[in-house]
Image 1 (spheres, rainbow, N blue to C red):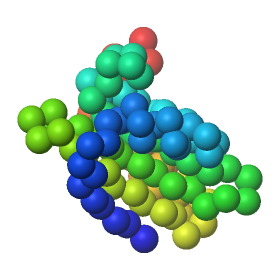
Image 2 (cartoon, rainbow, N blue to C red):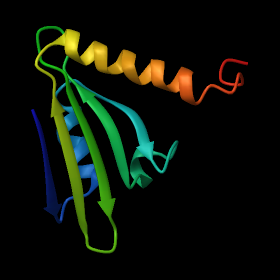
Image 3 (cartoon, one colour):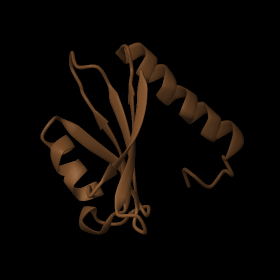
Length: 102
């Protein structure tokens, strides 16, 4: 299941604060590599153990003072793992310049 919403008056930091209390991990910040305090968005994963994997993508629209948030709830760990494996295979096939692991 996937859903998306525009959240007025929310910031990536307030959304992350809520997620971080629920076993979430930030995979990357937007702009890439910036601190959590200065980020304008993030990609995070929530869950583990018996919880269903939840992928959250949050991007702040600084001109309109709102965030667009997309959540993907995976029905099981196998589907989530297949998705991650597909991302890895795509990156190796289409973007590997031989410099990634050097």
